[in-house]
Amino acid sequence: MESCDQCGGTVDDNGKCLSNVAFQIAITEGRLSENPRVSTYAGNYMFMGSHNGKDYFKNRDTRQYDV
Image 1 (spheres, rainbow, N blue to C red):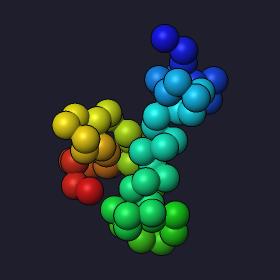
Image 2 (image 1 turned 30 degrees about the horizontal axis):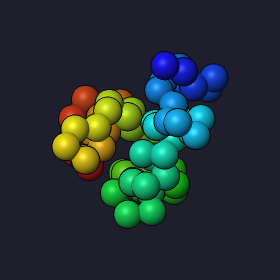
Image 3 (image 1 turned 180 degrees about the vertical axis):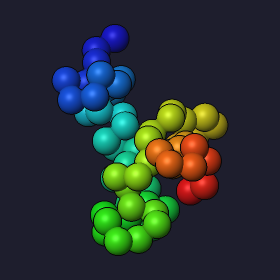
């Protein structure tokens, strides 16, 4: 399986990084934000994977899965 050149994560059949796709979906859904001034700023989170169709993000500071 191929790896993403940026993050080393998994890529899909089209070569798209699954982590980047998950972040974009979470931002579009309003779970995460591109605004660094809000608590849900995407830069404060790590993509931990997906399970049963749900993407999981862990806060870098608190280590909580809160979005």
